[in-house]
Image 1 (cartoon, rainbow over the protein chains, first blue to last red):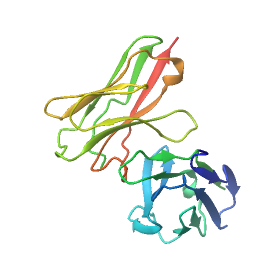
Image 2 (cartoon, rainbow over the protein chains, first blue to last red):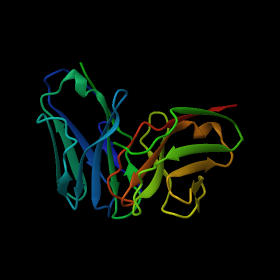
Image 3 (cartoon, one colour):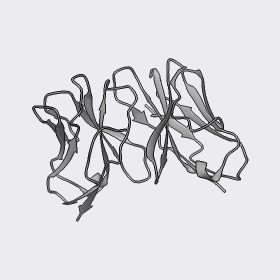
Length: 112
Length: 110
């Protein structure tokens, strides 16, 4: 099993640009999570999906952030427009009901 | 609010046992206790979880107090590769959303 696959692994972008982070969950998993990690705030849950439907997006910081899951094997997290304070590591994770959550290796975002 | 309390950091010598404590005094009867760890520059990875009884797996052991208000993750023989941040999390369901606190940074000395 390839695990949770995220892309890009690293991205540097200029303030105001659109950023799209991508995630392929583990096949057969019905939960997908997006987390953000910074030194100041630690690991924060942004949003999670169950069977491709967003269940809780209360962690999404503001309207500049949006997430979609068009099918069971793909999800995106978009930031538009990006700001320097969005610089962080963004983790995607997946699980099947009642079981362990598996995390990807993260997308390291720097907004300059 | 992660609802668990852990020491910020701990040190251990290589090849010695490590006991990582966690307080969760407001835990409900249906909450599981999960432990994840995060190695440098990697995503968190599952270590172990339990509800009431002590649990063992190939990575670690989990000792849960009888009143369930605290637990201890036990690494039987620390290696340099065990240096990581260890997170203790209480969650209703093993696979649902997890709220991470600050964790304990474990340093292992050779």
